[in-house]
Length: 327
Image 1: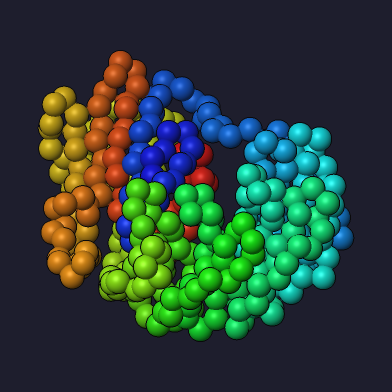
Image 2 (image 1 turned 90 degrees about the horizontal axis):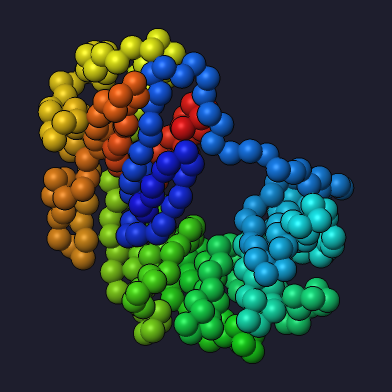
C-alpha cells in the first residue's frame, strides 16, 4: 500500500502489505500552538447497539453510512446529512463486510456466523437473496467493470457472485483464511492477504485461478522503526515548541548524519531487513524500500518531507503515533 499525508492521511492500494507513508509537513518554529488537522462536525449515536463494529460502506448519493454491527448481529443505516440513525436490519449472524452498489441499488452483507452473503434492496431494505458459503464470510469487494462481488471466506477461499442476479459463479481455493484483499484497478489480479501462511495470494479474476504467491518476511525489526518514528515526531514537536532551527538536534535524536541535497538535509533509514520478491524475483532494497526524511528551512519554518516503509503489523501503531502527535 502507498499513501500520502499532509495534515491528514490518504491511502491508495498497491502490491503487498508494505506501507509507504509520505510525510509533507510545515513545522512552524515561531508558532506555539498546534493546528488540529480534522474538525468534529457531528456525532451520531447508535442506540441499543452492543459489541464490536466491523466494516462500513457509504452511499455517497444518498448520504448514508452502512455499518456492520458484528456484536449486535445487525446492519445499521445512518443518514449523514440529517445526522441520525434511520434503520436497523436485524437477524444477521456476525455481519463483517458490507458493500453498497449504487447502479444496482443493492446492499451485500457478509456474515461470519453462518457463512452467508445476504443481498438487500437499497431502499426498502428487503432481503432479496442469500448466497451460502461454507463459513466465516468476511471481507467483500465489488468490481464495477465485471459487476461481480468477491467474498473471502472459510479456511481458505475467495468466492465470486454475479451482482446482477445474485448467483454464486465460482471459487478460488487458498492456503488459509483470507483477510483484506484488493482488486487491481488496471488489470485482472486480486491481491489477497493470507496471514496464517505469511504470503500474498495473487488471483487472476478473469480466469478464476491462483497464479502466484508472494512470501512475506516477519517484521522483527519493527521496534527499531517505530522508535525512529517516535524520535522523528519528538524532533518535530521539540523544534516547534522550542522555536529552534538547529538541524543538529535532528541528527542527535535520529542517530544518523544528514546529507545536504539541493538545499535540504536528508536522513536515510534503509529497510535492509526486508526480503521482498515479486513473481519470484528479489527486489533490491534500494528500489523504494527505505525510509527517509528531508528538512528544508523556509524563513522561520521548516518543510519536512519523507517516506516511511512499513510492514502490515506496523501500520496501526504508526498511524496511532501520528494521530497522537496531530500529524
